[in-house]
Length: 184
Image (cartoon, rainbow, N blue to C red; front, top):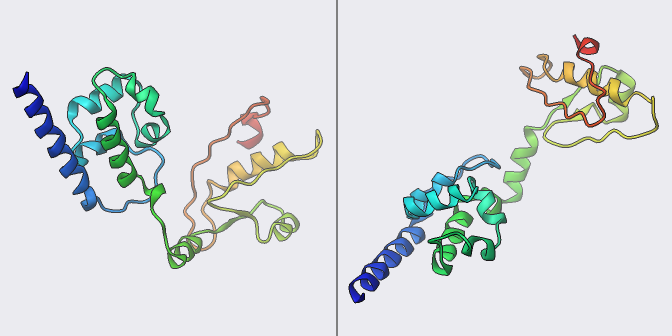
């Protein structure tokens, strides 16, 4: 029994030291879906990562959004491990990093405006629909919201000014208004 406790103590110390030395992780572009396997680079044991996956927790963000109480319910995960796992997640997650105003300025330089297909509407919107943001169109029935969405689906995929090579579009249709024949 004492040997098992000693071995567990060594494992905990080893994991703690490794988590603290996790500083070597390079800052990556902010991504929402960071695989939970990244915890291995921070000294979290493979068995613990496997347990988290079996519980349906597959991303760093999922660990951060799961309560301690829920994590404690996972067999083999105890309070000390949760502390180490949460600490490792904080070091990995780009969302916990403060950035300077200069870095924000550099990010804003990547923003461009996408034409709506209407010069007047583009002028009203300050040059078109802004990239890297959410633009909401709302209003009365039959005022052109769906037509605008269809038009933007097409224009967003076409190469344009300033070296824009075209992008991909996801159309989330909750009202069943997307008719592919209208945009072909």
